[in-house]
Length: 536
Image (cartoon, rainbow, N blue to C red; front, side, top):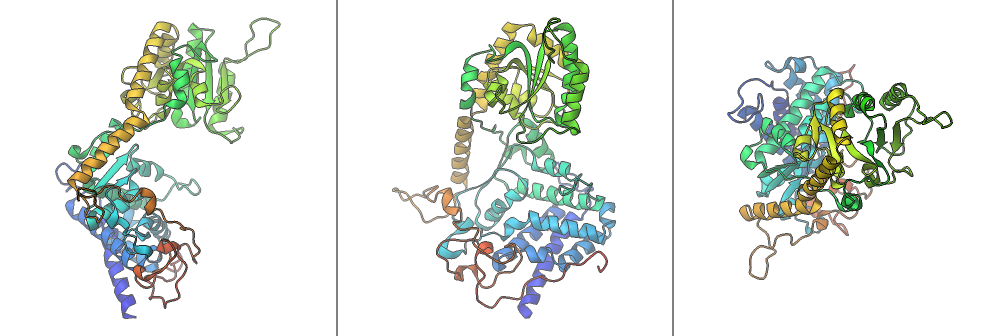
């Protein structure tokens, strides 16, 4: 009918803006200070207009899934990719690539189809009753905050401990489903989409709190305004490491000639370089030992793959040794698992030796290094990610992929007990000052009150003095009660009939999870057969 045609026309307009923005080339024309290649004002505006136009449709009709997966969406994206001036990769797009991209866009934009719009049953105000939106990561998680910012002026706080955009770039090299490389056009379009979304989030956020300087540099490069950046370190529970940390540098259940490595045995951790470095350590200190403690639980190591390769190398470099002709041989390198009787907890793992080693070639925020610092351990680390910022002079740092430098640093630590004790105590003091839950909560409490004082949200709840009452509704009040209530389909596949406010339910249930109403359905938007590769 006429209403259905109008809905399709509006969807085509808004999705067309979005498709044009993500199929535009990353060329010149970026505004001064944006830091993003090709983030022209025109393309940023087109992306924002398309995104918020789709959000308006979702708020009005209850969902976007069917439309984003429809033949209309595939055709609109294809026309954008064939437009003159689109990147070469987009020009090469095939039907199978278009299907993959539209499916990925539908997943990424699902938050737009949830009940944020303040029209739910029971009078729930939705985002209009929120004091502040805090996105704890980038990507799709920031979409509710962007909606609240645009509709109600709600202040938006964005926190990233690792750059979500960087993770998307790294993950784009392979398909998560089967591990095969994604086609070039798919990588081009999805990378552009995530780049545009990150730029929009950085442009609209009132304050951005990176978890470390490494993340902060990425955010600045991706367009974040330096004046709205404020580093807030992540908070960790120090109590579980208190007993080991208060013992000082004396190992608990280990000895001071032992090096300890804790983590997941995978290529970015470069355990191979660590084993070669330990071979050099053994040349100068034959009684040294290395304990490799894997934190991955419940999986069989297997006979192939990177962990098996590491074990084979250790057996080759370090044959079993015996103290005399009547003793059984023993390998100076042991592979153990967290939860084994010898290392039941993380605190026991870090306390099993005198020096904790990190040999990674890729790191974001090194959580394991902070845990070792809570335990009062001297550390030897490679200079990757935020390692230097975390260590701050309380440990030795060497270049990555340099076994000789790693060996020299380990020997320096093993041969100087007083230095180990001094650096371990300094490391624990630094961790307790910067990386505890208490400091993190205190920092964000101050930020919350600051943002809400600058951008107060109109609300009915007032205190005794007549002023607005922040946090009058606890966060739990916004969590739906029966969000798993039955509904045909996946909950995102239909335009829902009637205004959401007209629904009645015993308690608030998201529209996408509510039982199918009996009212006559509207004509769905964009629901039609998905094109096949042969028939498109």
